[in-house]
Length: 188
Image 1 (cartoon, rainbow, N blue to C red):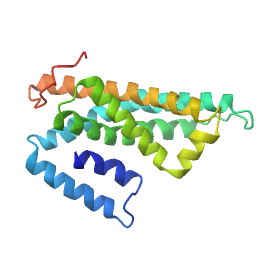
Image 2 (tube, one colour):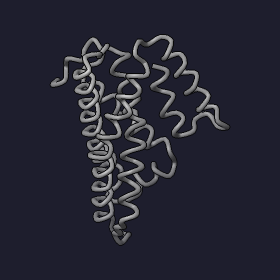
Image 3 (tube, rainbow, N blue to C red):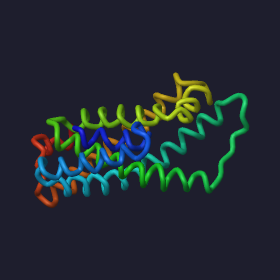
């Protein structure tokens, strides 16, 4: 799905000079023309992703960061209210809502079951995190290193992905307008 891939590409600025934003606009136009219920898919994905992000992704990432800080032998752990609020609101709400759109586009555009969609979404989110040089350094150099940090954050992202996609599926089931061939697979 070109539209689903364009969002993480824009987040890490793969195409400098605003090219990524133009790519998103083009992908949204193509999605709107080719995918029935495109704007409903985008809207429910954003709402489900933001809700799951505020409840799971933001707080889970903050908890994982605390573990990394406590395990790190060279740094003194520091916890601030501002840092926590930033993570929960920006990472959880904004990034979570954005990635919820990606996950819902994947779920609706491809015949994927719920667990498979969550796994694909986890890979996309972790690849987005690791594409940023600053975050990649933090994943590999802080705490006990990449062997602990990457799986721990991936577990948080997978829990967020599953919850976000479940919220989307339940919302669409209530409305009764799901177009996904596997949308009844909420428990899988």
